[in-house]
Length: 482
Image (cartoon, rainbow, N blue to C red; front, side, top):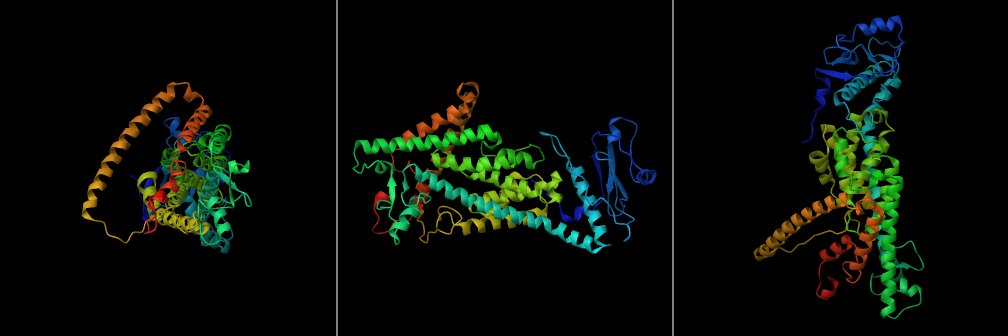
């Protein structure tokens, strides 16, 4: 369940404990010492209590001075005149070690102090007023940038995956950067016919073998397996060497990070780059892997990178998770073409701290990401998803019987799959195969490609097959297209 916090709570009176780590002894002037002694409440009885400062942030109590002992700086945010502008302008960044949990109360208290400082500067100078406007709009600007980047990245990944998938069957001789559909469209100019495309050249045809006999299929099979194994091997090598955190879907770790856990490098730029390239490679290799989970991870990487452009979020781990929540919504939006579904996923499943303003920013971020993905148009249909269902015919009551059997079969098959997956994971941890991930991926990819090649429908990607299954059948269509 997400923790909801309203806007009015920022002004409510509550006592927050801020744990300050041990650092070098700070030096202060006699005036600052006298000023600090009037506002800091300390408990010298226990040695550990010396590093705990009680900060009361209420609407009735004015916080005149706050000392950050971890940086040796005294912050004076009250009794400010126009001739004496307060300095410094920002609280220092809250730093946590790797695999530690953030202090939510401490970071939220620091943000309240920062906001109060900005409000006081806004009342005394024009630059302070402009700084206040920028601070208020920085959250919307940040999620706008995240939405733009997430939609563009998703479109590039979809286009690259489709091109790499068709590369296993052949290449466009005149324009190698085009996939099969766009290559055939450019050749026919009026109608796309997959079986009748002179511009597309299969790999046996590259060796001047045009007759469909034994050697034709042998060469086609060898190239199909070669490209599949090569793509999967390149992806797993990149992950193992450059970005180990890029493995897996990433959603469990994203939930952990949004709950307040620190994993350094998991949302870094190298993880983003390697996972973007690896996602295209493994999806095109033919493995039973989807892009939905990794897209959430990639969107959160984008949000983490852009948050450092805004000190309000980059220097406060609690505030940064507001941007990450909006990024998770954008990831689901570009993966399924469902902006509202992305917001609900972030609210109900992923986020721990989800203020009301974050919900509106998450919806805005997811909406922008969906619009950009539609403008990129990776599927050529101006839709944010590969297949779109729009039936005008009503279903009959008797059709509930096969629908019910499909539901039963799906539940039984899903339960069996989960049990088999758990047993395989246990076996993988104790076997030698689990200690050699590159060899494991190569063997599984080779077996998958060899089994998938004889059937033209299993040879296609899962998304392309589902799209074909959802196509309507006209009067002149035959069963060969199903």
